[in-house]
Image 1 (cartoon, rainbow, N blue to C red):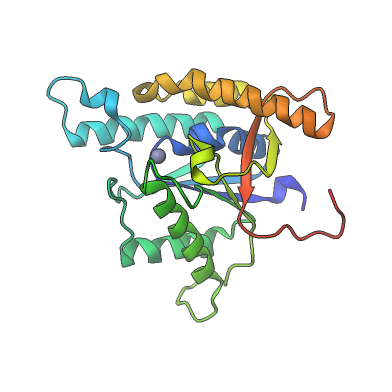
Image 2: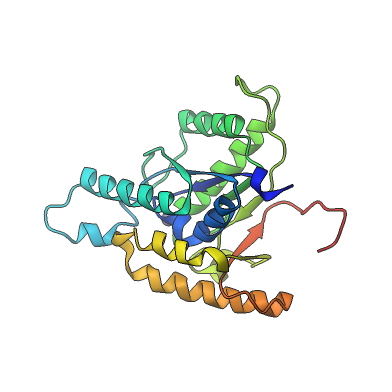
Length: 241
Ligand SMILES: [Zn+2]
């Protein structure tokens, strides 16, 4: 399919996950005319907002507000729509309402590409929970018997983000996406995440390393920055590539 016709749905457990792990993919697809929609299941107010909690007299509503503003700004830089579910973190727990809400998202948005977390992460149980939620609701959205005013979903491929410690999450970088043309936008989006400033440089270095590996695996010397992904389902093709 022509990239400009793609619709990318990104299911992010917390407010910033989509920026570190898929910011390049989002900016790349947006730059080519695709629609990109980010679903933030929670703000990561308990588990991923350490810097804010170190400030005196911090409260949960303020943390959520700051994370909301940061993520909104980052999504804007990347060219994505964003929706917040405020479903809570630590633990992130799917309710029947949340499940139905996500199924209806799949039905109405009709994504052609789905990005979400890996299914294993011993450092953060919310990430695999969000991945399971995304996978399950994608499958429910395919079922003709699931009540909805929108048509049933096809079979969009699912790509898992690279986790923070990939070796510990059984993550294999099966796909290296060249994000060189949009890396400056990813960096700018990362810099919206003031609450996690320590990660800006870390994810810049990671993109450089994945870029080097992308060159090694393709011979395309012009690649400088890349993001790694792992597929959940087999690639369907009539041509090996
Ligand atoms: Zn997270």
